[in-house]
Length: 247
Image 1 (spheres, rainbow, N blue to C red):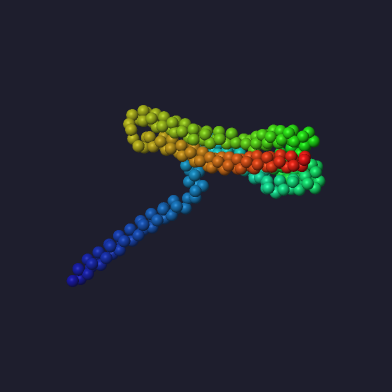
Image 2 (cartoon, rainbow, N blue to C red):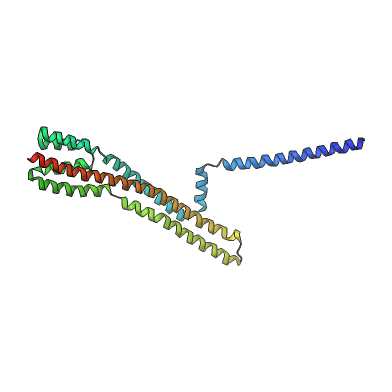
């Protein structure tokens, strides 16, 4: 009987130690998973950037930085160029009725934006006739449109260049993988994994940069189109105002 109790006690101790071992292993695994989860997005991105290789990843990063710089500059410029066209037209009409052309020109001088600049050019040629004023409005409208679209072509260049650089890094990474296979004389996952990983990372980063810049590009184009439409409508309204004022 005593032997049986002794055996049961030993078995209990053994099971307890096994449970403690499994608990310790589970704690270690949970700790490792928590440490992995604690990695920030910035750390993961930095690690992937280094793994992708400094040359092509650096060029893609330069495309992103330059593209974002151009996009932010254009967005700020376009937001400053956006004016309340209806309010400006009403102010110019009131100025023409009360103070004549000089008063209307003063209103345009005190208003920012391409529409006010176009109005000022048209009013400046009013003494030469309505036809000359209309020609000045059309000509200066083309100048203002060019200013609105300034540097947008560079942004489209970076959108096209980023994925192409990524694909070039992919090709070079695959070439490196095949060179490793040829040198080792064996197709092993560990041999080709490095080159394939570099290839995929450069492609991913190139596509991500292109997607980000494409979003900004489409927003800028839509903003330019809206301002240009307002310029055209306001120019037609200005010519009508000048014709009525001339009568």
